[in-house]
Amino acid sequence: MRGSDYFNAGDQKGAVCFQDTTGRSIVYTSDSPVMIGNVKRTTVLYLTCDSSTEGELQVQGEITQATYLMTLTSKHACPFTPSLLSPGTILIIVLVCLLFTYFIGGILYQTFYKKAVGIERIPHVTLWTSLPSLVKEGSVFALSRVTGKGYSKI
Image (cartoon, rainbow, N blue to C red; front, top):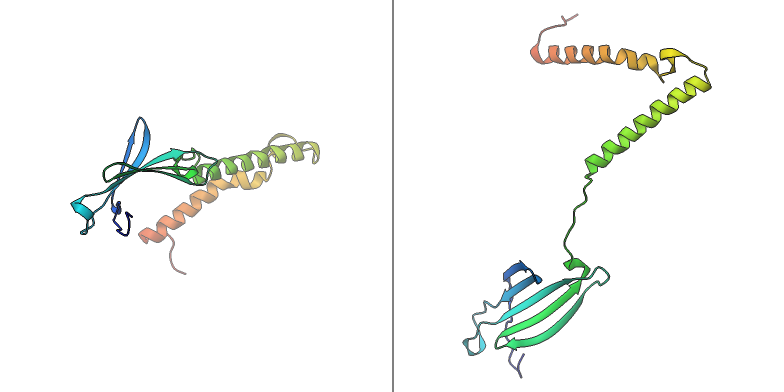
């Protein structure tokens, strides 16, 4: 605002983002049909990363005719660094840790408390030895239901 005049110093719809060696910035250009003195105004907003600051805006003002400069220092201006571990990766790591704990704990329990020897040390050994045949039987049944072949009706 100059005196009692108001003007558009830049619109969101005309914003352009830049990144160079000096950092990141957003340039807003006015697209207002009413321009004072037929001057297209531009605002340059420099983004500065500071992880300890929520947001601090410093307005330097009009640096050249119709060009305004501001600096925003904020933790939200810091570059995003994605985590290397996705939720699926974390789930697999937890599952592997639980299985490892189950087997080692079960073997120790069977060995020292139950005094088991040989293959009987494996926890729930009957489940693990019958699992392959159960998987095969379930697969054959599912395939027969899809193809319509296999079991006859009673």
